Structure formats: structure tokens, C-alpha cells
Image (tube, rainbow, N blue to C red):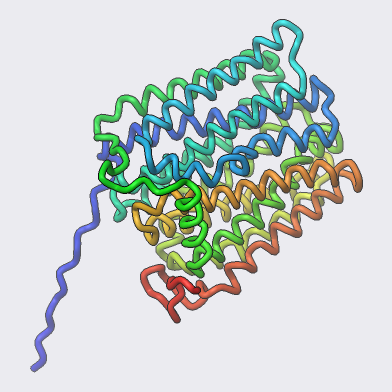
Length: 429
């Protein structure tokens, strides 16, 4: 008779709902995300409707919102690894609040111009780089690596909720109250987030005092080399950068498409843009289950392959009921983007050594958001040269093809990142 033995299972970690430091961290990030999405709706709306900006100026404004990743994206990873990360996040939000306050002041004195808004957006994007790299690098320290999937899913749910309500709130507020007071409210949100971070009692670890100070360029090269040599990470980074590039093309002309081509009101524009976030919120709620069911590696390539092509529905949109294709395309794209992000960000945080994590996060965001910036510049130029709707077709087609990077990578031979097939996670040389 063969006896059966029962393996002792490790109990799951307690829910992050009971983690006070994470709750405050989550709340601070949520308020910051709401501020970002409201601000990113208000500034283009004011530029398009009040300041009569051209498609090229709209492209510059859209590019400025992410240009910080091109300017300081790579050194930011080194800087973040050398300082107290929560304190850096507080300072970044405080500076963003002060920058935004210059917009209503200029408006009240009749001095607001498109170039000023572009400069404000650019400087805010520099602060956003430091904030984002710090929060992604600090999360494993705060909650531990065994709770990263849950933590990232909760953070993504807040970002998606901000995408839903932020554009609608921003559009409605601009229509009702003009640009000044909504921008002031956004600035207040950033200050509130800084105060929430200050209430976290857990230690904010400094950089190791006994570690040798390596030259800045050397550390940047190490982050680039690690990202390039890790084959799965390289494929994910290429997929993200390609999708972001063509989303930048889309972002440069989407507000003009909705306001000029489809003749929507400011509030309606915000509501349409919020549909992307609605899909993202559903994705964030389902992400933990979807990733567990498919497997972490499989979710990274299968989800974008199935959902990114839905963006091809957006250029089909027309007035009235013909707006439905755009809404469906935005919803499905938002769902897929968030599930993909939860899987691939959790992967980065698991695979990277703690000392390398900030530099890898900065490298990936430099390439991803740098591509978004360049795409926005191209989108503004294409809008001028070939028209708005043809530019939307180019953006949708390019985004659909982005999934080919991960589909053709070693990820297809893996189910989870811990189960390597053919040495998929081993660096190449």
C-alpha cells in the first residue's frame, strides 16, 4: 500500500488592505494620478479651444507632457537609487503644484499663451519622471516582493479610475469655470499627496552608506546593459516603446479629432477620453485573476496580441451613434494595456536585483516615454501634412503591431517568469 504525503503549503501573505504604510502610499499615488489626468486634459483643451493652438502646437504640448523622460530619464534612475525615495516623491509633487499655479495667475492677468503651457508641461514632466521612478522602485521595499502583483494591481486600478474620471472632470470644469480654478485644484491635489507620503511611519531607507560611489555614466551604462542583455526584458521594453510611440501619435491629434472633426463639447471630450480609463479600471480589477489564470509570461504576450488591434476602431468614428466604434476601441485598449502593465511591471520588480531596480525602471521609462514624446512630435507633424483621420490610422496600425515584439520572444515558451524555457531570462552577450 502506497502512502500519500501532503506537502505543506505556504499560506498566502495578508492582504495589503491591512498594510497601513501601503494604504497611505496608495492614496498618495492615487491623488497624484488624478492630478496628472485632470491636468493632461485641461491643458490641451485650453490650448485647442481658448488659445486656438495649431496641430503642431498641440503636438509640442503633448510631447512636453512626457519629454522629461528623454531629458533626465536615464540619470533619474541613478539619482533615485542614491536618495530617500519617499522624500523625493514629496518634493516632486510640491514643485509640480507650484508650476501649475503659474497657469491661473497668467490667465487672470491675460498673459496665458501656448508657449507658457508647453514650458509648464515640460517641467511638470521632469518632476513626473522622478516621482514615477521613485514609486516603482520603492514599492518592493514597502510591501515585499511576494505582494508585488497585488500592489501593482491596486496602483493600476487607481490610475485607471483617474483615467475614467479625470478627463471628464477636467473637461466639465473647464467648460463651467474656465482654466484657472481646475488647475488650482490639480495643484492642491499634488500638495495633498505630498502630505500623505509624509504620514507614512515606516522608515524611508537611504542609499547604502558603505557602497562605493560609482560615476554617473557608469551606472547608466549598467542599467542599459542589464535591460539589453535580458532577453525577455528586452522584448517587453521594445513592445512598450513601440506602443507608446504610436500612442504619442494618437495623443497629438485625438483632442482635435474630437473637438474639430466630431464637434464634441469640452465635457463630451473628457467623457470619451475617460472610456480608455474605464477599460483600464476593469482591467485592473481583473488583472490579478487574468495573470494568474494565463500565467505571468503568457499574459505579457497574449493580452496585447488580443487587445491592441482594437484601436483600429477609433479612426472609424463619426458623429452621433457612429462614435460607438471609438468608444469600444478605447475601452478594449484600456483593458489590455493595464493587464499588460501589471504583468510586465511585476516582472521587472521580481527579476531585477534591488541595487539595479531603479536604473532598470528608469531605462525602461526613458525608452518607453521617450518614444511617446517622439511619437507626439510626429503626430503633430502628420496632422498638419496628411490630416487628422489619416494620422489616427497610422497610430492605430502601429500600436497593433507592437505586440509582435513579445509574440516573437522567448516569452511564448514560458508560462510564468519563474519557469524558464531555453534560458529565456538569461542575459546574452
